[in-house]
Image (cartoon, rainbow over all chains, first blue to last red; front, side):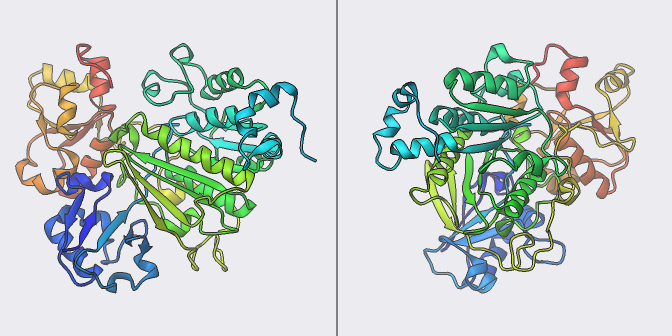
Length: 93
Length: 384
């Protein structure tokens, strides 16, 4: 099954898991499976009208799914999805 | 005309002069270069130290904070003797000790839309070492609008990101992140913590990229984002493309001058979290102590993480980490008086919003968190 890497700031919503295996033929199905397994992620990834939030980036391998076929991008068994969030950290100034 | 190097400078930079990609002309280029470092904290420390050591002729530092004891775990440009000193002054002293042949200009002020253009104008390259979204978007837009490369770095716990955003040659920060997350969705390092070495790793990579860009050598991280994880010791790269709809660097930009970034991000960029929610929903540590002393029944809800209990605790409190609160509301009784707390009041303010939206009304936020409690009520507890 494809895997999805969870970034550190979101791991408190996946019981600390950094990689989650997800079921699905497309990115959309994999994301639905992810939310089924970890429903607390929903508000962090999707806005109220069901679209992916604009600060959430999903990469398949090294490519942004926006540069592929978006949520319709097909997935293979050994594919790895990366969730890349905005992080702000640096100095505390 | 590039500046000449003195005999002493030739000796100082001899290890650079030996590398064919740098050489004497490269070192003269660095001497003629100027870099503005935004933030003199975790990322700014190694960036400023290595750029000073490398002989960048003029380095600007922007920060308005003072050195605090809790900075020294990672902000290695500062020392224990500098506690309470302005960060820009503490950093300048260390940089000029390392290399008196350079010029360090300091700007002891918040970096804002009002002063950013003027401050950045005379610099060749900008390094983003900030810790908040308003300043990140400001730095990005400034670089796009003024045609300067922006060497970006960001950190959280064990994770870091590095890229070079140069809108003339590739995407900008907004191409990847068109909008900031809503306030409170992404924890800061002050709340979530950060491995002290992590900004060292990421800042050192930023300094490397800056020097490459200034010298025009190698393959800078333009159009690529580096994702580093210290626990896995993994370095991964993803491709970044210019977003044709980008509001600042796209063909039909909406942002053609600097905007109000605090409003854009919905958060203050230049104030430390006050640890309060306002609107009468706060309670001070002294007020809480008084209520408990009078024997009033108050449920104490600790929304920190379990490992933080080892540092400090308030007797009798119930622990439900913020991340679990939404799914564990059924464990709470909305008829009961309740005071919510965390380390300093930021997470508990968010917990309070969640409780209010779920219909709870008899709730208060402990202003300043358990740290305020330790300072004002229970000195046996440490402040962290």
